[in-house]
Amino acid sequence: MPWLYSLGFLVLAGGIYAAWEYPRQTVAPDLAAVQQRLADFDARLTRLEQRPAPVASVPQADLGKLASRIDALDAKIADQAKITDQLQTKVGDQLKNADQAASAGQTELSSRVNAVSGKIDSLSGHIETGLDAIRQQTDHLAARVAALEKASGGADTVSNQLNRLARIQEATLALAAGRPLGDIPGAPPAVARFAHTAPPTMIQLRELFTQSEHAAIAAKQPDDTSVPLVDRIWQQAQGLVTVHRGENVVVGNPAAVTLGHARDALDAGDLKGAISTVEELKGQPRDAMAGWLKEARSLADARAALANMAGQS
Image 1 (cartoon, helix red, strand yellow):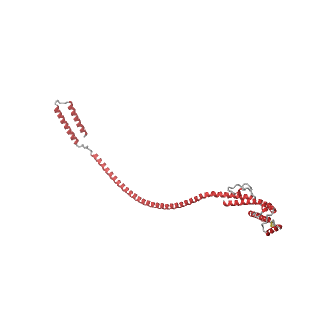
Image 2: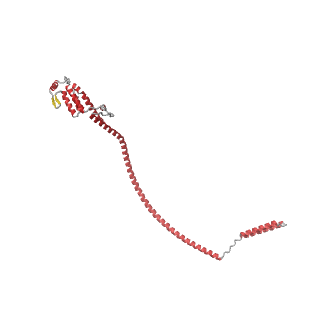
Image 3: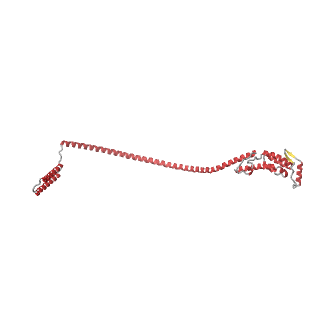
């Protein structure tokens, strides 16, 4: 079909070229002829375009081969369709089995989830119980810590008190041994006076008592004019007769009798009793015992002060 177009175009081009190169003398008739020829060419081209394309002749053998190939392809297509059906069936079975397995798995999973949920609830209950116990223990520990913190402040006080008691005990032992007591914070004057001075001992007081006793007995008896006559006669009679019971005077000089009772108390370790007895003396006998009374009172006052300090600590 294209070659016909090309042929018509060449003929038309050749005619135009010939008319252009070799024009006739009569222009008008030749132009009309050319136009007529162009119209003819257009008509022929139109008919050629409208003509159906020629069918090439195919050998019969080739057609047979083509038919065989088509049949083979149809057979393959049928086989593929059968295979496709089988695959669809197999896939359907697998999907069905998968659905069944998924359903069974979902049921099992639901059971396991329910079991786990039950365990979680049980564990939650145990955890809450444990938390309550822990809270109680925490509160108890907090109370104990608060008590310990409160007691820690008192522990320092107790420690200070124990240290003070130990110091007082040391001072008491030093007082009994006749050694200086040393400095004690807050000590009363009766104790502080012996911080660096040795206090008198019971042995020293007994020796001093014996020395002072002789002077007191030898001293002039006090004026007894205020004493009733009968008592004065009795005292004078006692002064004339002296009765001893061991070293003590039972009947005789009144000062000797009083000092005998004081010596008994002193030998028994009753310093306060001895002091009280000596304080019954009057006049010169009392003056003779003044030195002993001073030393004895200082020791007794120190003892009492240390005992009071120990009781307050």
